[in-house]
Image (cartoon, rainbow, N blue to C red; front, top):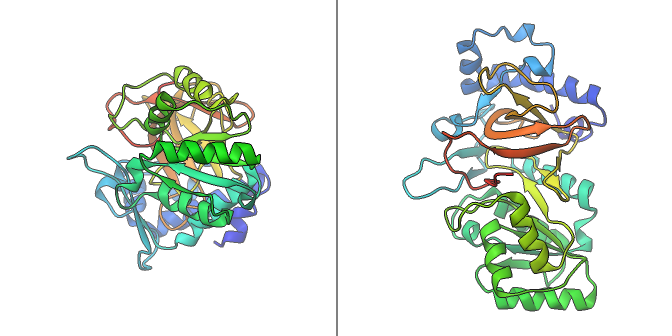
Length: 325
């Protein structure tokens, strides 16, 4: 399997063909996934459709090394969590898959990053090691090639000054922020910047009370003077992200797909427009496992878009997209 095949997917038929090839490869080469499939008594040769593929519960990343080759690990991404919580570890043996995935997806949804000033308000992620979000934001900042691009911790006055500068200069500007930090900012500062793209990445992390999406986005829209709040749906265990340009409706890049499973029968894939557990096919995750059963609840629409509607009650609190819609 090579990058050209995965990132060159252009239609449903090619996606299905590639997904089945990746499944057979990982069923043979990912020890954890192989044992999981065997435990379900599933004959891999009988899997002919993507809705027949078993999805590995995301919790395995907390206790196992989920890898599909023997190559040395280049980078370890780890999830955020409160003190004492067992966090996920994603051993990435070829980080170039991740880099190409988020670069291609950003270009698909937003155009060339070189045309943007990229500002990142990600204090909690900057304060720990192993964040895949920081890895992505750092690359986008560098790829923007703009000296005004950069990271911000709690220096909200400097961020406000930078936003005013870009507004006055009429520069295309992207502000990527963790939810609680964006709320902290707009409680102190207000700006009318209609052209600004505000992308929240989810996560209150116990810093603030949880809010429904509509309330959160209304506050952020008023604080930044924008019509809509964008969002990113990604997680430590994946190498691809889906994006929303408003109203909490997400779209995947061509090499990523969302399915929903029955909450009582995890092997039963639901039809569109029904609420269920979110399963993710991420073909960029070739060297780990591309078929992940998350603890998120969601609904898929007929055009392939989806919403995140909450989380399973018994799941751990996670750093990405904890909002209850």
